[in-house]
Amino acid sequence: MDHVAATRSRTELLRPTIRTRLTSGAALWLRLPVHPNLSSIPRPFQVLNCCRTSMAMDFLAGCAGGAAGVLVGHPFDTVKVRLQVQNSAKPLYRGTFHCFQSIIRQETAFGLYKGIGSPMMGLTFINALVFGVQGNAIRLLENDTPLNQFLAGSAAGAMQCVICCPMELAKTRMQLQGTGEYKSKSKNYKNSLDCLVKIHRKEGLRGVNRGMVTTFLRETPSFGFYFLTYDCLTRYLSCEPNDIYIIPKLLLAGGMSGIVSWLSTYPIDVIKSRLQADGVGGVNNYNGILDCIKKSYEVEGWRVFTRGLTSTLLRAFPVNAATFATVTLFLMYVRAGENIPECEAGPAIQQPSSM
Image (tube, rainbow, N blue to C red; front, side, top):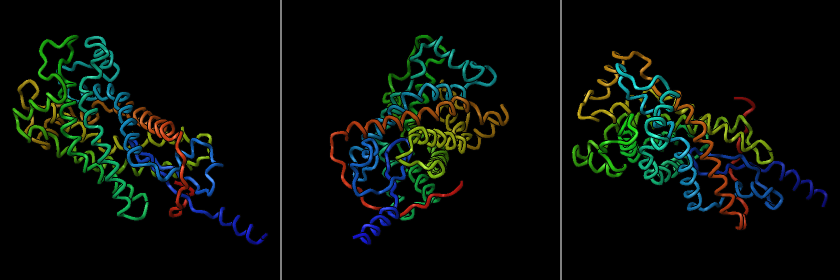
């Protein structure tokens, strides 16, 4: 009996760890020990530890988290777009905080939420694509390594461009509508859907997909860096369920991942915004990506490619924090009354000693 007990004890100590995925703005992974009796684990971590969380619950949690992220981050996005596309010869705003103040003073606080309908409409489909593609890509690649996290994230970013590009086109046009006016005297678009319909009538399918190439060039590497950074940070921070600081650690990892992903491709985002805003007012200034880069640099220098960066980075951290917090609370409350099934052991994950 002593030999059996000793063997069992050693087996428990050597049990592999698993990674439990929580669907949100990032691939949120927790390294959790497989335990034969989940009743001994605190209730919140029983929820996070459940490998069998239904796809429907993951999907709804991701949507709720994404919606929270949009609500928190959209005002910063509006400021970013205004700064990116304003005329350098006659600038309306001196910087990020001046832009915030001007919009609230001239257009009320609702001016910061112009164009929010478009990202809200596309949210469900984007979440479905990003997390579906990323999860399947990881399974196809078999080994869960940092490189594979980057490749899977890049694949997810590339696939969701189909929805992301028209959505951001409508968002950009709505954000620029009535700039500097307390009440827009003449509205070209009633809402985001009306905006896309009118663009399609005037410019066809090509007009609706304006900026698709730059969106692809931005989203593909940025999502790769996003998933890679989160994976590396959660490993480095040793996110374990018995750590009282696990939530702050995960929030930090998510926020920093968002910042890294934006920094990796931000100049491309400036060009994308300018191309999608081109033609507002009936005047087209650019003939394509290279022409936009050339003209922007000639007129404003290299600093043009950092326009709106401050508001973007200010937005990146709280958006990811809000997304993660919402997803976690959603799963905790929804599954609070359910029986948590025992998890199956997965492949062992080596915790790196340093990063």
